Length: 404
Ligand SMILES: Cc1cc2nc3c(=O)[nH]c(=O)nc-3n(C[C@H](O)[C@H](O)[C@H](O)COP(=O)(O)OP(=O)(O)OC[C@H]3O[C@@H](n4cnc5c(N)ncnc54)[C@H](O)[C@@H]3O)c2cc1C
Image (cartoon, rainbow, N blue to C red; front, top):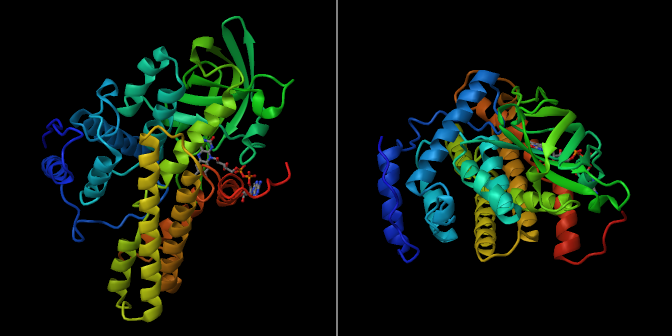
């Protein structure tokens, strides 16, 4: 396999750019075909620690290779290692890449590339940007999100992990939970309470924490999908230099909202994760049920909402590239996407009947069981469906705010 650097400019026509993408992908990846494709609709993996590590390493290597060739950070400018092309160019590449066999995606890589790198680009100091942005875009280092706590998920501003400043050092004590990929990350983006004397949204501060710092204790949690991508993270007298503070003291809520905004728009972009409408059509064909009008209706619904989700992602990407901060569009996109994840899973379950319940060894069936076990996760992560509806209602439609 070889690499060639991208030569497109922002004035390349879509056809010219597509030719360039095709040439690079042909030279670097085998094509995806029904015959070679082992169905894998798992949303969360059922793997041991070492297997998970190998998967992450492969995903990192692929991301670095894409960035170096100009296809991994397409809308980023050369200063950050990208070619500075438009969201439309990115769409051309991402759509085309789905025709090839890529290494499995991993949420740890997505958090680092799609959430933390753009947040530091927007809110980091010049030194922090130089230190982290390119490294995170290439996944030379990984970063996890240390936000949720046992008593603070949807109500993130209720978090209790405490950061106390003495001179130029902060001392942090508390517990985080559901921290995806914390056991594989070099860094964590932490939100902690730094002032208890002000309203809760104003008393939080954000930090970059080295995950190997003394006092950081990471404990994996077993999930119903089998694997352990989540963790509890305990912070006992962890010392963080003030230069690792992101934003001003008290700006933690702003940092959190920025990350969550990027999370909503990026998670809605993973339309291919965990089995999509084309996979559902493949299943219906294999079962010989495509003549059934009710089956056809379900296949049509899944395809329509998938398309709607992709268009919302595209609109959001154009807005962000035009300099707008992530807005309510991300919530709409995420909701449409997670609803469709459920729609696709429910359809597969109804097509398969009782075969969805156990791994019978029949090709292509347990893959859908794994989809069903993982889909609820994305309806909670990054703000649950109910929270997205609240945001759309309050900020998008101007409905009265719910009682606080
Ligand atoms: C796959 C996955 C990955 C995750 N990764 C991370 C990570 O890397 N880092 C991290 O910090 N966190 C992570 N989380 C945690 C995630 O952010 C929280 O689970 C989420 O914010 C919900 O919080 P909670 O679990 O405490 O549920 P709760 O907030 O207790 O909610 C329980 C239920 O009540 C509903 N609810 C709560 N408040 C309202 C309201 N105001 N109106 C209507 N309904 C409401 C919710 O929708 C939900 O159904 C992850 C979660 C998942 C599932």
